[in-house]
Image (tube, rainbow, N blue to C red; front, side):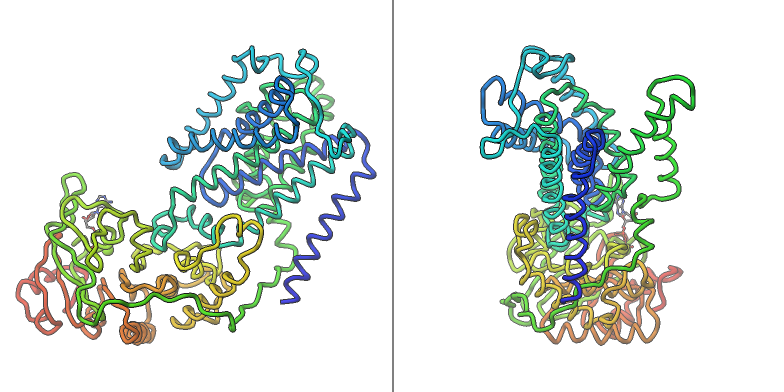
Length: 601
Ligand code: ADP
Ligand code: MG
């Protein structure tokens, strides 16, 4: 424990001292560069959250800088509002605009989302350029254009001094870095990281995906607007270039240079960019013999190099040279997380699938299928490849909408609920196509599974105030990993494991949610013989603890050993239902499996 604190504390101490001491020795020119680095860092930290962690690309981030800058400038000049309040108003307006944009845009995926943010950015810049009576248009806004606005001041002392202002900017950089680092370690932050890998997985352990995307989008907008307003009060003059597409692209280059998935890289990237830019601006014309914006060509090449050779950015390359930071040990004494009360008696119907169909265009993947799962049983759902089993799982968990029919869980209809709501009612699952976060430890992956059992909100996360709950979740995750035999590897990266073992991690993650019903999609695929035997033991133990299991599996030996009842599907319809013994002898089942690669009964 102490070890961990001292390592992290030390890094902070060194960094803070650096930020305090360095400006004392800088000339006006370098103070300017340092301020610029700070301002860009603020925006890039938002971009890292948004693009690097949540996987939502934004090509319009500079537009939020523009909103922050112009709102602050206009309110403090035209309306003589206190500069600090104007700055807060700028941030709030940016958040409001981001919210409206997000409502319309965040549903889009991949490059559509990136293009939409680009378009919104153009709209905002267009407004700044053309609403001349308010913004001053292309000539800009400031005392030179008759729109004088006052600098920020502290206790009546105006911050005009370049050195002081550099300190102010870097105070905010440190603050935002601290809040963001905390956030990304917190419950919410882990969930944000899960968004990039797969929002379906995230929803399956109770994350409200659209809400979380919006939250990340708003945070990034707020950071950008803060930077914009700080810029406005630094220069006391702004023009629409601050909100331009070219600025947005520069910000993305900085994010990529530092490492799009790294918050410390969000400071390193702008640092490198600003120094390179000033270096290139000075020497390139001398080299080429002409002046002009040639540095953009160099940045193009640097970006191409990074995309080809160092996707993780340049900082992680350096970081590999340093010793890894020690992980925080698990507090095994932590109080257990609250457990669900099982309120259905053994043998009562837990899940009812009632005449359910699912069409994919012309294909009827599930066709009027009905079955029940009773509390405490292990029900097998088997059938040849393409029979509709995984589709059935997706219908139960709300990932897919039903075309017809109803599904109810504990007598209440769930087929109209969102996936995260269904998860929170006590249905957990694993995925046939693995859905772990490869670059995260097993432990953190499993902690994520407990999202719905924990409560810490985004503010608690940012302020580092979820300590107790986080310790409890980690201890619980460790217990779940122990349950599947992987406790020893808790701190290893998920993608370092063989696929079969990763399936076990998925089971641990599902168990972490404290489910009443667990859906296992081919859990034995890729397991060795002794691992299969351990899996059988594990599933039996789960049953003994009162957990109900719905099992899709191709290994017939395993299915026949484990399941009390089996439902056989073929082409989406139910072919047979009964005890393993009856199923083995059912002629229709034998016929369906004959010649199919997946089976020997
Ligand atoms: P199983 O898990 O039993 O092997 P699936 O449920 O994955 O089968 O698939 C059933 C059928 O539905 C297959 O023909 C598959 O190609 C089709 N299918 C599954 N998901 C989709 C989808 N999202 N869009 C279109 N077709 C799909
Ligand atoms: Mg399947």
